[in-house]
Length: 196
Image (tube, rainbow, N blue to C red; front, side, top):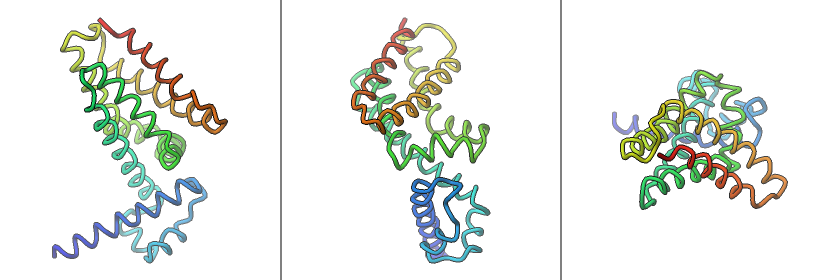
């Protein structure tokens, strides 16, 4: 019984890995399930058994990417010496993680379009916004932030960072090497306005 469960999990992870490559390279609309199942050495029926449909498979890939970026953010933030440095490091890590070519299209282009805003926002909240909210809440409790709505701060900062990722990615395509630092400087100024 245990062996079957392990094999099933390995099969699922393999499908997600292959699908992630296809969604990254071709985009959701152009990625063909036939190519994914062929590369995974499965039947279409086996894929549907695990994911129901193409959108279900994309959701699993999207969630995997969100989780990886979230773990990167947590790890980088933990390297900070104080709450402010942790916040800045976490924000930078999010921008760096999201602009990676293998994440960008899935997270910020196809993600909202394929999943719809409700699902996209729930996933973003689960993996990115919750960590940001916890950090802001902690900083407010430490007396480091103005006594204003944590919910509003979280949504405004998250939205700004999602938009910054799209802007950075576009500028990187034009070989603008200073674009990440420009975004971080602006973000630091925005965050500075929240200081108590």
